[in-house]
Picture 1: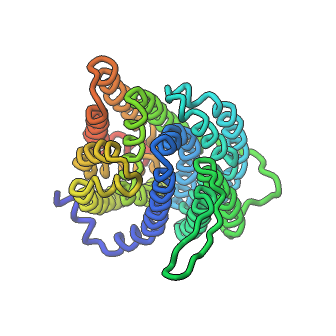
Picture 2: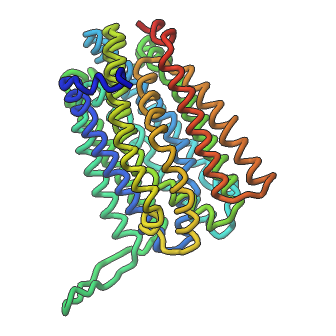
Picture 3: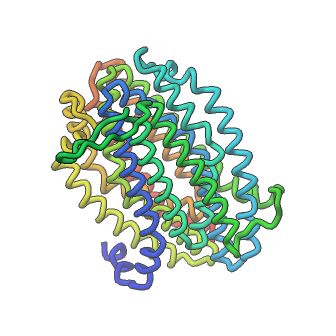
Length: 460
């Protein structure tokens, strides 16, 4: 305990962590708020609408997995280069990010649009939500090139210590998304403000309106992130056309591919997990997906600090400084655990309130409240998992975390959920207990890995 708390007395380190983390935490908090607003507006349409949107949410996470992995690989390579004071290597890596965006973005666009008509059926959705679910997924995936750009170029900027520009761009994306949601989801209506009647135009597109709002926000965000990278003197791409530099790409891929395998493994598990939940009925799917959305707010401190943990780990490995890596990692873990513990207390005490934000169907609210109270108990432990994943990724040690994810998702969560749903006939509460078992298994395994010295000695 003393070794964990000692770095908290290093004010210079805490200031550096704060400078790197607060824009990302703020950005993620606002993104979560927008997700809350999206889900609440769709939830007011009805249970079927919220289930249609929520059904594809885990597949959307799966789609984001390789994009996020490449973003983390680029961040790790640039931060390690800057830690080694090799600005030319950092510039080359940033230059290759444009090539990666084009190849990955166009490939993912083709794959997702081809899968969209069949996805709800693959997931075992009931017939009444399949059309809306398919349309929603296709529309939000149409601007995949711009979504890829927003992820990768944000990581390029964060690797240089510039977290504020991605935050500002994401603020604008969120504002666009919220405004268009209100105008496109709802039909025209009249607001009664005392004696004044104020007509308000609305497209009344429902689920399709929510998808269009999200797609437009990605178009704007991806464009602005690209322009921000081009404006950075240190990392500005050198030519008008992206030309592959194979040594740099191999270095990025060596870090990114295990992360991609890790995230795809987890997200494929999430898709199978959702398909198993879909067998419990539309109400269970709605409660499950809304509860997942509600829970996201309580991960914000952890995932917001994960990029800072990865960046500082990259600097330390680039500078071959084990003590620096241990101190920064311990400080971020301590802060993340503290913040997520405080937030989880609110989730435990008021789960029905958080469900009620999104939907007013009593059955769905009660189902979701039951599982949220359970998952709140594992949040502090999951904070450690989140931060250490960032540390391993930033340091370039990605293979063992992949194996841990593979075992925990498929050997613990999916296997246990299949037994509970298909064999024992249990409901949503049992399914979320399987999630908790997965989280706790990850906690013990990543902590054991971190406290070993072999993984780090190979990198320094």
